[in-house]
Length: 211
Image (cartoon, rainbow, N blue to C red; front, top):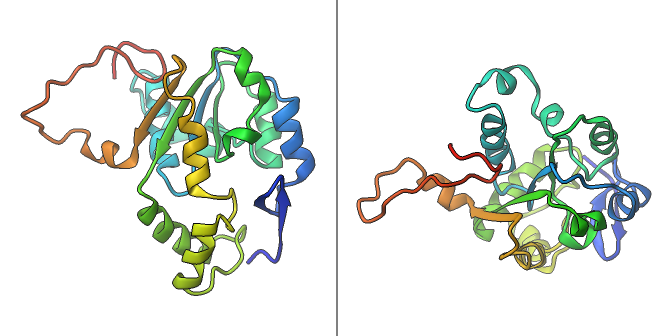
């Protein structure tokens, strides 16, 4: 298990493969491209599920890329050093992942047409999933009891900070033409019959006219 976290601008991050210098570089120097697509989530909110969807959209439904290329190679993580290095070498168009709160995201996003796909999930389910995940992953300290982890979660004393602040920050972009949000719970309903609703397929997050 990880022994230490560090605090960057009031938010906790694991010491393993993360650094204040890399986070500052991402925020202030990383150049977002107009054809970038970002898969953004708070931890344990459907990141890999959405990544598989976006990967298939990018390949027009051909599963070959998904089957043959590891997910962190298909979509490097901006948040930590190895992923950042991969992102900088990634040929366009880039598919990238991040858990970063909006205030730590590259400032160059504001001048770009890059697409943001933001998936959010019920915080109760995030809490339980993150608790068990923290028991397994070396990035995290031992979360202790579920009751104590609940207190940390509610106070934002967990890596990537408060779920509430994360969601509020990113959902502040709602209404921008390059921002698309969906919930984990909505994804679970995809494919289920809904006789009261007429499905439409006019557009997708990656700009394709089909799914």
